Length: 264
Length: 314
Image (cartoon, rainbow over all chains, first blue to last red):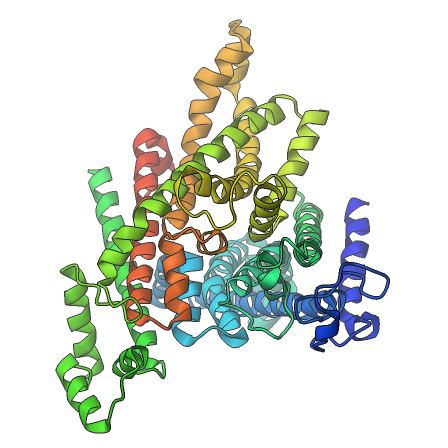
C-alpha cells in the first residue's frame, strides 16, 4: 500500500517536471532587471533572482536538467556495469579473474575524488559531469551483477534446464535474466537520490552544470550572496531538491522491500 | 602467518590502486588541451612566442615521450615533489600542508558531533523498537540523508549568521567558523550511521548470548554497554574507515560553501583556475588517505575479530 502511494507520488513529481514548459509562467532564462530580487507573490510564486528571472520557472526547468541527468547516469551505469559483470561471469576463467580484480581495485578508489578529478582535468561542464559519474559508478553494478549471475548459474534449476535440452539463449532469457534483474533495479533506484545530490552539489560550487542553464544546484549558487535580502532564493530550490531526493530514497527503500522481501 | 599474508595482499592492492590513479591523473592532464607552459605565462600576463615556448618545453621535458614523462613525474612524486601550483606560484606540497589542519579540525569536530547525535538516538531506537521514539528517529535518519547537505549549510548560515547574528558569514577561522560546517556534516553523517547502527544493534540484541545474559539476571544497561555495544562497534569500523577516508580528502562542497580553506576548498580553487599540479597533488593525497584508512580499518577488524577472516577464507 505504502509502496503504491509512493509510486503515485513519484510519478506525479516526474510528470510535473516533464510538463515544465506548460507549467512554467516565464522563460527560465529571460532576464528582467526591472523585476530583480522580487519576493514571492502571485506573479512570481517563488520570487525572482538577482537578474529578475522567475525562480519558479527556473526550478521547474532545473528539475528537467537534474532529474534528466540523474536518470541518464543511473540507466547508463546500470547497463554498462551489468553487461561487464554478466560477461565476466559468463566467460569465466582468466578473463573473469582479471575483470574481478580490476573491479576490486576500482571500487577501492574514493568515488567522489575520482569524479572530481575527471571533472577538474577535463573542464567542468554537463558532459564531463555525466562521464565522470558513469565512470565512478559502473563498477558497483558490475560486481553485483557478476555475483548474481555466478550464483544463479551454479544453481540446480539451471543444470536441469541444460539437461532437458534448453540452449544458452533460452537459459539466459528464461532463467538467468529474470532472476538477476530485480536486485539490480533496486540498487539503481536507490541511487537516483544520491546522484541528484551529487550533481547539484557539484553545480553549486561551480564544477557541475554551468550557468545560465537552470539546474537545482546552480540555481542555489547565487543564494548565498543575496541571503539577507532574498532568502526565497535559498528556500525554494533547496526544498525542490529535498522533496525529490526524499521521494526517491523512500520509494527506493519500499521498492526493495517489495521486490526483495527476503533481504530484510 | 595468515595476518602477514593478508597484509601483503592489501599492500599490493593499495600500490596497484595508487599506480592506477596516478596514471589516470597524469594521462588526463596530458590529453587536456591546455599546455602548462602557456597556462603559466597566461597567468603571469606575459607574452610568449613560439621559439621561447619550444625551448621552455624542452627544458621542462614536455617534448619527451609520454611514458618517460610519466616515470619522471612519478619519481619526483615519490621524492615528495608534487610540483608548483600555477595559480599560487608555491609548491603544491606546502599549500596542502597549510590546508591540512583545517580539514583535520573539520573531520574531528564533525565526527564528534555526529557521535553525540547518532549514538544515543540509535540505542534508544533499537531498544524501543517500533515505539514512537523509534519511528521519530527513523524519520530523522531518512530526512537527514535526503537533505542536501549544502542546503543545510546555507540554511544554518541564514539562521545563525543572519537571523541570530551569532557568527559572521565571512568568519572562516577559529572555533566560531568551524561550528557551522562541522554541524552541517554531522547532521548528514548522523543520519547515515543511525540507519546502520540501529540495524546492527537489532541484530546483535537478537543473538543467543543476549538471552543468556538476561537469564543470568544482568541488567539491560550492563548487557548493552558491556557486551552489545563493543561488538556493534567492531562491525561499524569499516564504514568509519570510509567516512574518515572521504572526509580527509576534504568535504569539498561544504568547505567551499563556508569558505573553510581546507584540502577540498583548495581543490575547487585548482579546478576553477585550471591549476593541474594542484589537482594532481590533491588527487594523490585524497586517494591515498582513503585507501590507507580503509585498509587500516579492515586489518583492525580482522585483528579484533579473528573469526571473520577465517569465515571469509581470505
